Length: 142
Image (cartoon, rainbow, N blue to C red; front, side, top):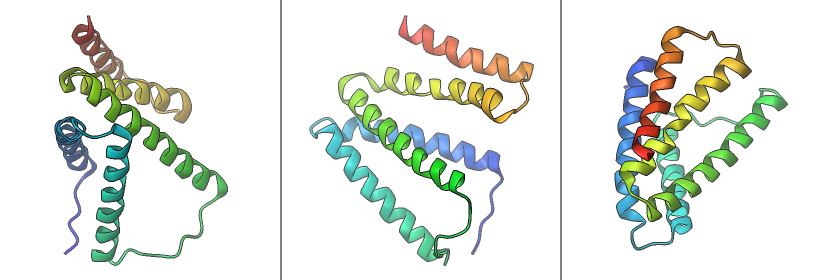
């Protein structure tokens, strides 16, 4: 069975899983080195993704694409790893109710990058929504 969900539904599921990640991660790093916790999490992600690829018969020989695409995927992997390492350490040291919202400042940062680097249109809704994300985080911090 091949279930196709619209991008909006996948984005909501991503937010739900990210929320669960924060809570489970906070409990998980309570008595474990945060770097080791990130390593364990990474292995689990690798296994789950391999199972998904196998279940959907999506394994294929890496090929095609261009050097820029490959370079960006590799850089994305590096930045994801760095983000996870920082996130788990922050969860270990601080309250999840503040760590997660600060982490979500990435929403506003990615909006700015989309506008500035990818040429996506700047809209009043985008400016208002991004501004509210930043304002909400600032309210929680101060």
